[in-house]
Amino acid sequence: MVSIQEILLKITNRIAKIKIEQEAFLKATHGRFNLFSTLLKVHDEVRLHSRFLEFLLNPSSNHDCGALFLQLFLDTIKEDISIILHNDHENSLELILSDFKKDKFCWGGTEYKNIDIYLEFKRSKLAIENKIYADEQPKQIERYANEIGKQGLILFLTLFGRKATTHHGKRYVCISYKHHILPWLNKCLAATYEYININQALQQYKKIVQQLTNTLENKEMNQIIEVVKSHPEIIKYNKDISAGIEAVKREWLDSFWEGLKINFKKQNIELGGWYPDKNCEYSFSDQYVEVKIKNEPIKIYFLLEINFADKVLKAGLGTHTYPEPIKETIFEEIKRGKYYEELSKAGCSWWPLGSHVIKDRFANDSFIAENYHNVEDLAKECTPPILEYINDVRKHWNTNDLVKGKIK
Image 1 (cartoon, rainbow, N blue to C red):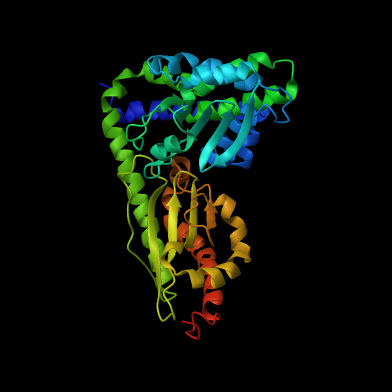
Image 2 (image 1 turned 120 degrees about the horizontal axis):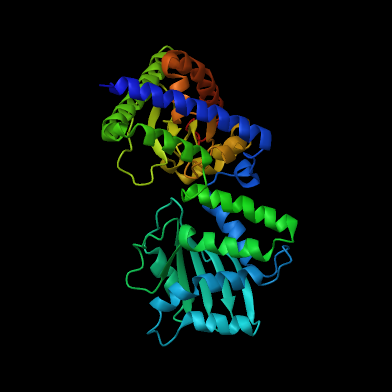
């Protein structure tokens, strides 16, 4: 009888070979390059997705395709929306289509009244609220519905069409990247095949959407599936193997935090109060710690975070804890420092000041596997840049009159 160890060894060896072959193929074909993911994170709702969707839908954009993309978008969503609104006396979609055919509409722009994408026609309005991983704000859909009125229509755009929780009975329609944006992009690609620049941009954006919705054609995965098919007995151990992997990863992360604590203690700095965030459906932060520094005139709330969405270890300030006078003085100084420039790579917007990447490409599965046996060295490597960041911020803190108590 073949043991599970033998099966795992065969499968891992075969998958490793597939990975090497795929890596060679990507390098040879330059198939990894994507301008969108090079410049921005693939899940960046505002700067990537809302901005590019707005660009396509706006007939006045410099894609020079006029209202082509808007028409194709309305055609794509028409059937689903018509089913929902079939008993509505003020059918917003019919008004939109009627206005569109008469070429009587104007573009409202992005983030109009905090709405991600807003189109205003002669007799109707169309609002698109774009959510990839972020949660809704309190009463968000209800507020937007009140803003655009009865003849307006709100589209709630998510990856897979999840329902809104903040509509409170107001009318809205669910659409998704998987079932609406991807089919729409296919129509746009077919309509622009002779326009090389816009067609290539659409192809690259489509790959980003496929990546987010797990619909990307993956030859590597097909090969791995065949490997598993050749050893189907491994399936019955899937749950145990997954649980074991997660336990080992958690143990490794705990060891990394402990290593940081040991190194920081030598500098009279304590790391304390770490908060595993295990129950969040969309968890951007798995673990973070508060850095406590003794004998400061005013407590400085430093945070360290392993950010699994952006694959970084970063440091930052918990800015919500400070009164406005401090924000207006010290934080303005920090903004001009060298670390503030790293904000675009730091991920979360709720650390708006001083957020700084300590180590990039951190804590994904490959990283943990490659650094499994040198976690102590990794903690030592990460300690100096964290201390450098902290000391830079403390310099502003300790030389400021407000903090020294001259200003109350």
